[in-house]
Amino acid sequence: MKEQLRKIKEDAFAALNNAASAKEIDDIKVKILGKKGEITAILKQMGKLSAEERPAMGKIANEVRADIENKIEEAKAKVKEKELAVRLAVEEIDITMPGNKNPLGHKHPLSIVIEEIEDIFMGMGYEIAEGPEVELDYYNFQALNIPENHPAKDEQDTFYVKGGKKKGDILLRTQTSPVQVRVMEKGKLPIRIVCPGKVYRADEVDATHSPIFHQLEGLVVDENITMGDLKGALAVFAKELFGEDTKVRFRPHHFPFTEPSAEMDVTCFACGGKGCRVCKGEGYIELLGCGMVHPKVLKMSGIDPDKYSGFAFGMGLERVAMQRYGITDLRYLYENDVKFLKQF
Ligand SMILES: [Zn+2]
Image (tube, rainbow, N blue to C red):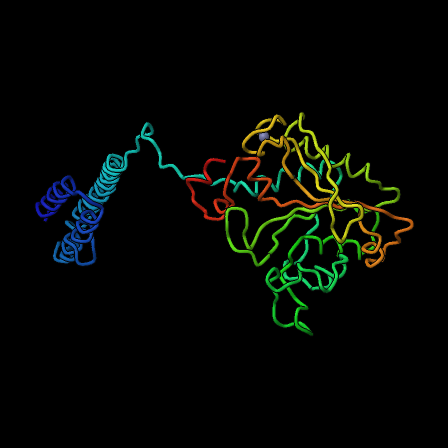
């Protein structure tokens, strides 16, 4: 029996030394120490021994069991170490290898221009106001002193939406001016806002037209606001946007919602006013429309035109972006060609 135990221990050590995985070690453990294992089988035979022999043999059996158990732990630790070494070798990371680049997106030229203009006006104390793109005829036309028979109301220019109380009640706004009306209606004075946003007109797509484009309008209403305030504010804006040397000039114009009305030109960004191909020799480029808010418009929105006055202005943001970046065709802004957009 003693010999059997010695043999079991020898075989177990040999097997454990060769074991290459934790699974193999577990199998050996079951085979030797398990309920139906070799040691257990020996211990079952102890009954056959004489009372004198039993304690000595029991002691040897327990020692062998303990030795094997220790050897198993040792073997397990070795296998673990080996597995780790193998894994490290396989998964070795070379920190000098170039990484995978995640292409980082950036802002669309239109967004850049919108945010920059917003920043300029916020710096001058203006708030940003927004309004619905699906608008009522009242806010888009009537409240802006645009008469029923105005050519802009022609179905060829305006996208009408079904569902109003009568035909033509609801439309996609053709300008951001309805936001101004909505702000004036709230009656909180003074007003100093800019409203950027998308507007819609039934235009054919070409180099300078798109059925959807962006406008930014501004409105100031307070006591004693004059044309001088308008000119001062817009001259500062033009310098901030196009550079300190930028000059502005105003030409008389007509809009139904302002009186008097004007268009403002800025000195050409390409030639600085000398005249070139970009400005067609003019030295100036048209930037925006503006004027003193028509007393009728103030009155319709519940503001007393005898006490308050104001100025308003509006510009197409595509035109600003195109001038700014020398883009010659408006369609580039909407084709989402990454190669084109990456330049800005
Ligand atoms: Zn020029």
